[in-house]
Amino acid sequence: MKKKIKIYNKTTGHVTYVNSIFEAPLGYEEDSRHFTATQKKHLSQAAKARGTPECAYRDKSGENNPMYGKHQSEETKQKIKENMKTIKGKKAYHNEANEQIFIEDGSEVPAGFVLGGKKRVQNIK
Image 1 (cartoon, rainbow, N blue to C red):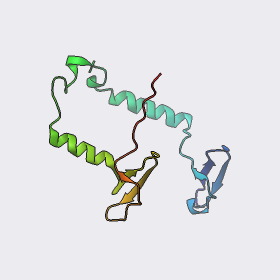
Image 2 (image 1 turned 45 degrees about the vertical axis):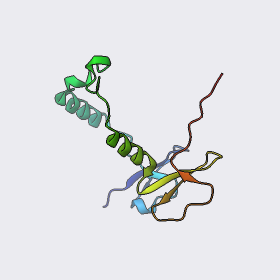
Image 3 (image 1 turned 90 degrees about the vertical axis):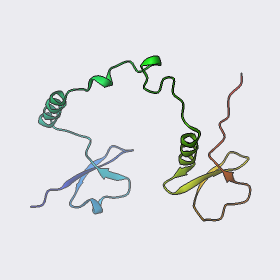
Image 4 (image 1 turned 90 degrees about the horizontal axis):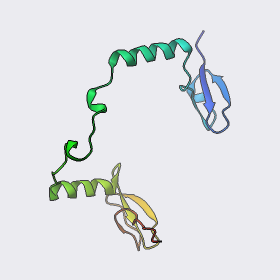
């Protein structure tokens, strides 16, 4: 007999079982968030055996930061700027109303939109 798959609805919390994930109604996901007591114990022991690297706890502020006193080159800054404008092959465009859209390279850009993400608005009190 084939094992049933436990699925749940995130919004309602309703849990049910199906034969295939393809039978799951809209809004339901495979339930992988619950572990048995034995699974929890095993995961805990494995994590303790792995240990935590020392670098995770060291102070990385100020002079202890590996980038302290260093500066990004203009080329690196430009690469970061370009990557921030692109999401999965699409570039971000915004207009005067600060609406943002993502358009694939080579596609026509609607009138009034310019390349770049939303403009950040600072609250002045």
